[in-house]
Image 1 (cartoon, each protein chain N blue to C red):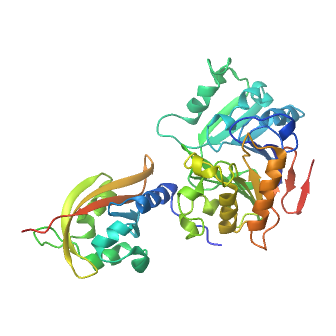
Image 2 (image 1 turned 90 degrees about the vertical axis):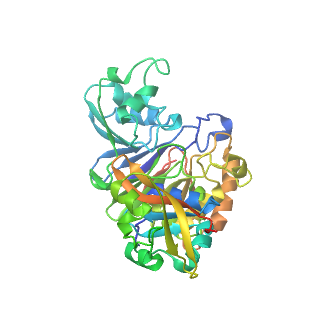
Image 3 (image 1 turned 135 degrees about the vertical axis):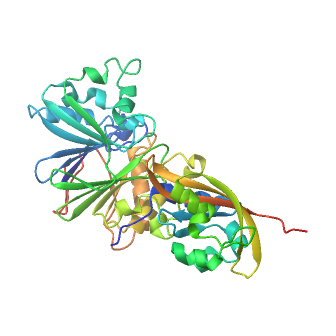
Amino acid sequence: MERKQPDLVLIVARSFATKLATPTLIIDARGDLVYFNDAAAEVLGSSYLDLGELQASHWQELFAPRTLDEEPMTPEQTPGGIALLERRPVHDSFAFRGLDGREREITVTALPLYSRPDEIVGVMSIFWELPAAP
Amino acid sequence: MIARVWGARGSLSAPGPATVEYGGNTSCVELELADGTTLILDAGSGIRELGQRLLEREHGELHICLTHLHLDHVEGLGFFAPLWRAGWKLRFWGPPSTTATLRERVSRYLSPPLFPIGLSEAPAEAVFEDVPREPWRVGSAVVEAQSVEHRGPTLGYRIEEEGHVLAYLPDHEPYLTAALDDDPQWVSGWALAAGADILFHDSQYTDEEYPQRLGWGHSSVAHAAAFARASQVRQLAMFHHDPMRSDRELEALHDEVAESLHNDQEQPLIAREGLEIALGTDRHRGA
């Protein structure tokens, strides 16, 4: 029996996210998408049940994030990527195309999740859709 | 590996005529490993009597794995005879903390005003270490510790020896982390218990009590059974009995659990003081 499972901090973060009405997305220490809640599904244009867990490169490719000035962003430039690589909280805005084809702009607060002072196990990103420009 | 239960009560010692059959001492399980090493799981009041028996040896080394530092899991230390005898070496393992070492945290109890004598006065050599991230060897066994869902930093343990596995999660509320019939990798403690021969698991509350105690860090018997099913353990030992639970009430809960386990799982046990389980021989011994 394969016994691997995420760290408890990631498990509890996922549990917390399932109960939040605020859009929330969780990546693990490799940057892989491991969960987003129903509120996030509204913004991303697809449910987690439909999309499932995705490797870092795949989910970045799907959403093709870019700056508000329309410059493409690498995974390392997104708030979640910065929080993971630089191990610090990040608050920023960017644009992407949802899986339903609709363009969106969001503001994200990304928090690194530590299980021990020197061990990061993932990042929790909470985000809000910005109102469309008039 | 032989497991002996010295205390299976949760939260508070509960001696008296209503608990005489399963016992009133708080959490303590002794593991006698194949190479003779003694590994002790938790230091509740049950460890007092274990300490008296260990004094049959003049000295030695003991490994004590603490799940967490709530009083019912450390309160026996002040009366654990080997700690108060020179010549003994006690090696403690416990959950890491960002604020204090394990020794400092245990010393909060073993010091005035909570206890008259300080830990620093104990004649035995006491070594305190945070559990390693990876499984580590203790005698002839491999021990694995992981954080599990409970109030405050808390560990569960998995002890494997000669292909047999004992899992120990006395204080655990996995229901808070995921639906227990959900993808098991998102259920707290699952990897520790998966496929174990015997699982000692928190079974503190009735289904009626649980909603009033949601988030207190313990499981209902239904959740304990669901966790045992999800983990596909061979046998569940109900543990951490509520101090208000009488022997007869425990037996009624046992019957509920027995009905809800998979057909290929063995009948559950009610952990009781004196229970002895020899893994690998399929024999439950002791009174």
